[in-house]
Amino acid sequence: MNIDCGPCAIRSWRFGDEDNLHQHANSRPIWLNLRDTFPHPYTEIDAQRWIQYVVDPELETNFAIDVGGQAVGNIGLRIGEDIERYSAEIWYWLGEAFWGRGIVSAALRTITEYAFTEFSLTRLYAKPMAHNVASIKVLEKVGFQREGLLRWSVVKDGVMMDTFMYSYLSSDWLAENGNLT
Image (cartoon, rainbow, N blue to C red; front, top):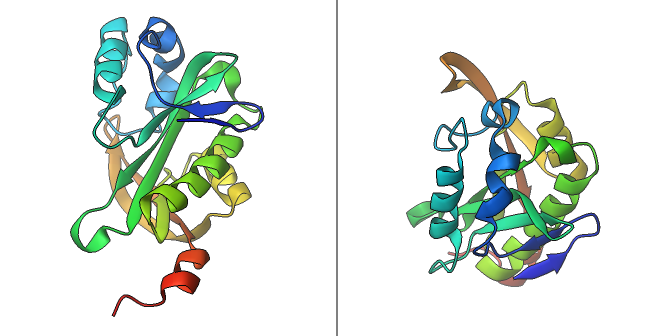
């Protein structure tokens, strides 16, 4: 997959991306806003493991954010299962050198459209940490709506933190399919 988003492209991960990935991912400010499965420090070995995991998967749900031919971040989906099978969590990170350029907004807008088209979803959601003002602004800019505050819902770096729940609903899906009952 490769989609031009203007200031970036969203594309499939490929072998060779690990060569520079650790330089963009090895950031405490990035790590502080992601799940603990994202390592810190982020080493060359972590980059190699990531590429082994995301290149040629059975179901492609993680995509490189590419600027100038180089993978500088990730945007991905966690597709729900069972009763949540029409929902997916969206998550992303971008190397600090690329912050403030509208890259994540463009990538999020593009992947939102892609997710509804490719995966028959009705709902995308994100759970940014309440202190992550930049991510909250990106979500709102793209049209995600705040649904609520999840108090003390995560612990990061030994600190209990609040998160917000944001969602984007597919009105097209409902118009075409109606209720599932």
